[in-house]
Image (tube, rainbow, N blue to C red):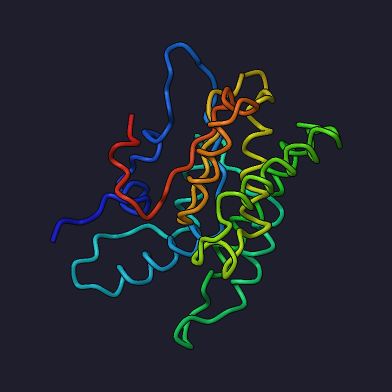
Length: 224
């Protein structure tokens, strides 16, 4: 059976930097927003693989995250930090934490030293923030109304809307002295790409360079 070249395969094989979207006509920084589900999947992959006979020295999620952040702006929102803390208190199959202490600490460090200061310095106005949040919420309600999987039975979460809102706002802010070329959302949730695509299909957001990377899918087409 062919192994899926998903996010865990990409990161463990050292190809993360190739997920940057490089446009010759739009040079600048790629930012990466991390969803809680991606962190949980990294933990699952690591603990599952290390028990297998064909384990190939998979790296611990905390080390992978620190390695990625050393050469890429890897951003976590406060809500994602809070969710990671919650999941670090839950056990899987009664014997390990869903997110281990080392990974939780890595996420907290990312927020303290990178994401928190970056989001503070972006200095979004109240009107700017509220307007974008409202547009994201309206789009989510419109897309998933009647969708029994991701609508009435399972609404788009506040964290998902916050991630998408933050991504769109960050496209219009510099990263240090560099312009931002693309903001990428790393998430396993299937409805985030639909929400991003719907917003980018509107007149208001058509020029906003936001991309959802579905971390459980084969990502070879995303590599540069």
